Amino acid sequence: MMREFESKDGVMMIGGKSAVEIAEEFGTPVYVIDEARVRENYRNIYGAFSRFMDTKIHYACKANTNLALLRILEQEGSGIDAVSIGEVKTCLKAGFTPDRIMYTGVNVSNQELKEVADLGVMINLDSVSEMERLAEIAPQHEISFRITPGVGSGHSAKVITGSKGAKFGIPLDEVINTYARAKDLGFKIKGIHAHIGSGGQVVEPFMDMMEVLINLVNEIKELGIDLDFIDMGGGIGVPYRPQEEEMDVGELAMNLTDMIQEETDIKTIILEPGRYIVCDAVVLLTGVNDVKDAGIKKYVGCDAGFNTLIRPAMYDSYHHVALANKFGKACTQKYDVVGPICESGDYLAHDRVLPEPVEGDIVAVYNAGAYGFSMSSNYNSRPLCREVLVNDGKAELVREAETVEEMWRHQIIPERLA
Ligand SMILES: *Cc1c(COP(=O)(O)O)cnc(C)c1O
Image 1 (cartoon, protein in one colour):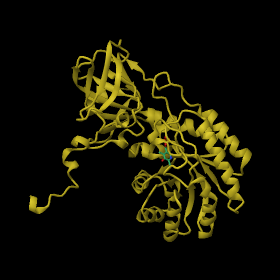
Image 2 (image 1 turned 135 degrees about the horizontal axis):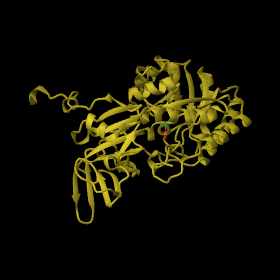
Image 3 (image 1 turned 90 degrees about the vertical axis):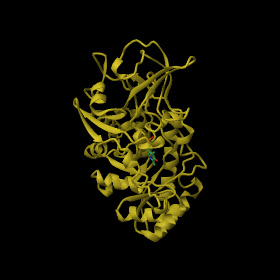
Image 4 (image 1 turned 30 degrees about the horizontal axis):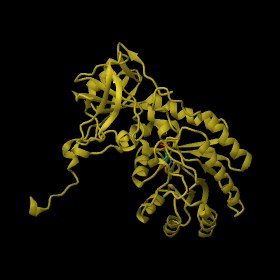
């Protein structure tokens, strides 16, 4: 089921702190990170797999790269899945040592490969071209390969990554030749990786992918290459709707580790959950600026739009919404919850029953932790918003709101136009 929140005197509570107080103290829009929930999610997924075999969690940090959040996961013992040099450096800054980071780029430059290799971060190669280029740069480097398993899964066509013909990974019929070539080139070959997509809610595609990986591991073994790990990628979905079932990660873990242990000599499984760890640990609080009755529709106009949370506009994603200051009050009518961006596609939620809203109310947008802040933008010249961390009833600012001046800082007006 979707995560629910405590109510105290008609106010939503996040991590033991009133959402209304957070909004008043820090301003809106604000992303509120619940530290205890981050730790709980991490321990759930790690615990589910580590009961059965040696497990490494590489948090897919593109979901949320807030430094305080990364510190929490570093303390928990997590590793990192990074997709860019920027993410690698961000995670080093947060205290992760290079050996805990794996880099999985796609269509990356030689300069970026060199920077990553020089930092001592393992590289998960996405193509034959990338392998040949890395061989020139860092021939002894530790590597694995991302393969295209021919299995896809995800909440939207835009985030399915593992299907045949995808832009990601080594095509299946080239995998064995590629491993043979990597051995000739002198790389330290550590494992095999696949990532089928993001936000899948069923176990079967993961098992289909694992079958593909296992067959490859055994064929690769015949080349005289013994791999240390299978990396199953991320993609474990979470419920976004109130009655939605959640994936049984215990069953997922049991099935996948069973297959690995029965059919291979592989000792370690790596997982790269992003969404699973942070999604329901963050709530976006947005203030109601305007309420409009447009006849056939009623609008709740908020200070967060797709500049702050793009998932509804980009993927038609459902995010549950509630009025944090009228929490649990009877709902009266249906409203569209929309933002300040000058596009009709700017919305947070369509056709939701809410208690009668007025200006000054606080809308809580659930499940905002994954691909929320990290995909936010300056569109309409709106500065990026704040982030707050709550723990044990206390709230701390972990990112200041950007200023308008800061949005200009990299622009140059040529002298002749000054
Ligand atoms: C995005 C991504 C993930 C994480 O996906 P989630 O759905 O957030 O778990 C894991 N691995 C790779 C390579 C990715 O690109």
